[in-house]
Amino acid sequence: MVLPQPLVAGRLVRRYKRFLADIELEDGSLVTAHTPNTGSMQQCAVPGQQVLLSKSDNPKRKLAWSWELVRVNEHWVDINTHRANRVVE
Image (cartoon, rainbow, N blue to C red; front, side, top):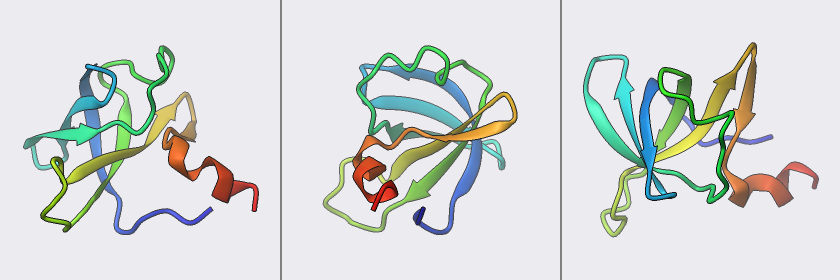
């Protein structure tokens, strides 16, 4: 599976309005990230969980950050539903 690089580590603060998540980065800054998964993500959107984000340089995007992966137990889970078809190719 090909992921955007580099990925930036953080911790989930909260997820809201289906497409938004507040993430605290390792440097302590707080960013709002796009959540590319409209599902409930009950097991994947627990505050305090480790997450990995990608950052876009596209000035036309409303949010520069996208939430890509979340650590559930000892496993990284890809939450980006746009990537699902490419995984099985």
